[in-house]
Length: 509
Image 1 (cartoon, rainbow, N blue to C red):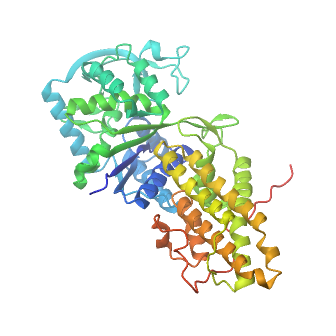
Image 2 (cartoon, rainbow, N blue to C red; image 1 turned 60 degrees about the vertical axis):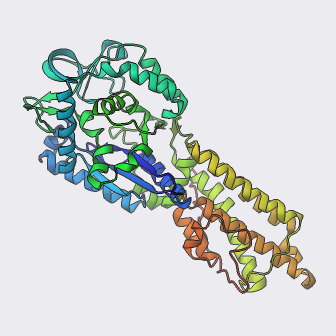
Image 3 (tube, rainbow, N blue to C red; image 1 turned 90 degrees about the horizontal axis):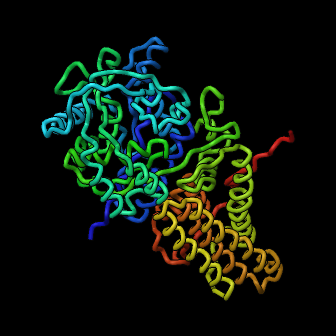
């Protein structure tokens, strides 16, 4: 029976800024989920890309003295090269300036317009150029845009409007009938609360007289498309272009909470108007904060992924982000906390265990793995890793990456205690006890092999290195059903230990 596919999407990243921590986190989550489900033989497709139209792009290009297209080409290229250098996998990279996307947006606009769900009218409203959207008075905070903390500009324009309000009741009914449509649950409640008030219709055009950088409306060449009505359609336009629309019912959108309304209100009503089914799930994460507050270029506290890779290694950075943030909640980023995780969990927990086991395997048996002869303590070790595997599967299904990693580290802690309690370094002093020493070390090699398999989606480079030190091909990491004891045939040799995570010395302030 074919396994159900998984279609994972990140937001399209706006090319007014280069890749930073917020972009990296959501792309990392897509990468981890993709690796996790592929290892479980699920067909996976990961989509990411860049959002390239709108006011802010035109302004950034003008400030740089280049055309909007030149600016978009440069920054989009940086996103792609950054994800590649960081080892973040994706199956397709879409740009909203791609010709196939432009054609798809214009087709959807034409179809919805022909249905009568797009109309022309005058409008006076409060417009935030940073958000590129109109606000209602009740949405402001002390008269300011809630995101940019600036007073919006009052604009009076003739524009085209999408009859979003016609789909409000249907959206409410859908959200109430499908509690899993938006996760974590608190965000679904937030959207339902928003929908208790009339949502009105959505202005979906901008006059070329003030913004020419956008997708031209197919029914009026005086206007370009509102950037959200353009960008949101990427999740479908890419599949249409690739001939992969069978993936659409499996769509899981990964987004930050700041773009919840666009994805939970604008997007589903657009899909309803276009006659398309909704996505399977909207997965909403919180924000990374710094001690100074939210990250920004003006504060000089932007965290760049390749800087972190250069300082600490990409796997250490990945581990910190996934262990520190509870998906859906805000978290605070600090390099001090990252170093503490690296030195504690990674160097002392995983790295030290691997070094001790491989060193003893070399010292006592020249690296040759000895036969198993399980005793009670060995069964308890096996049970600890079996429990970690079960817990990991359950936690990843709930997007609780931090809980999944905690489960694996409980098993690693058990393995470190097992070393102390079985004391192979003491038993080895008695030649008669060497068979037991060999059996203990074989159990520990199996523990390391299992740990590498469980951690491969999270720490892919480390998992491959650990498999190599155990003398196993990296392909063995995908054999999740391999029984305990089956990985190491008679005569199998492990390698001498290497430091998986060298400790980082913290200089005294």
